Image (tube, rainbow, N blue to C red; front, side, top):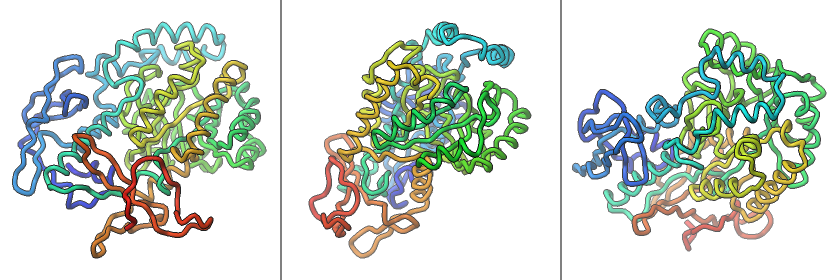
Length: 473
């Protein structure tokens, strides 16, 4: 009931006093929790809709204050799990369909794909994705359903307990307001040949990223090639097995391939995994021996598999941490929407940073060889570098985000006299934040630190441009 909320905020359990207002219905459906938050799950009133395009009931008026418990007409943990695991897709206006339809069609497509010119592939994909603007849910270009629901729950708790603020462990280390990661999926030989140049482009803006390599693909993955990436401070992950788009079509096939993928993961020293074309099934990930996965989009309107996790924050799928893709891929922007501007990325980044989330990117060396694409990419790199210099984002490697999020998941807030303290490994980089109400909006204030930094500035950690308490604790 309360687990997902507590995992998200890492606040003291005493504040999360939720309970159910009745017995949950037998079937899942769509409903609203306030005017701007769509949920999918069971409700105590049983007033959910089969399709997201139906008239949706707002259950926010069914919250009941009962003694020391705030009783909800649904389970937040169940709803969040349904969104993150994309369990709503079969009911969501066809949003769960695959680009290439049935497995037989998909197998045939990926068999001939290497022989198709880029122009032919682009034409085929534009036809298959032509309905993307008609998809009602998740919300384009960034879906914040999980974050909006948690913030509404937090607002209810602030009012219910009659407190000015609720403390929690801030989302990112060193007081960073948000986070961004750059990733590069290497699909074929031309991309493999461009990797060194792509690293030059990244390094020119002081940005490091991860390269996802196909172990049994169209290019050699030698020890020298792996070292050429590692020696420059970039990260290496495994990208599917052979990029044929069939990894998740059959459970037995997946398990057979998972054994080989795990072997390559150990050989590469890789902590992370991403499937080809972002095909996925979160319930199968337990067979992979990786620390984190990067195969789930926030909004999958322009992906081969529709859907989306409806969140801009990392989350655990069993023991694997999911780092969702929260922005449009380079291929989709350049070749499906036929745009060579960073305007859409800036719009997505703005929405993500407003919720202090993770802005994650996929750029393919295969598609950045064109001069126009390179110029657009360099413009985005400069924009991200500017956000970093302003202290608005933590530009990190995926493995660094994985390490931090795992440490944070084990931290807890404890009361010491009149102050809160953080306990747990990595606490020296953690910060305490306070959630407050300003009108009906939840705002976060980061606690200032009165620790002398090594540079003599009097402040330890990165200072962001959003509100802080006046007094140090």
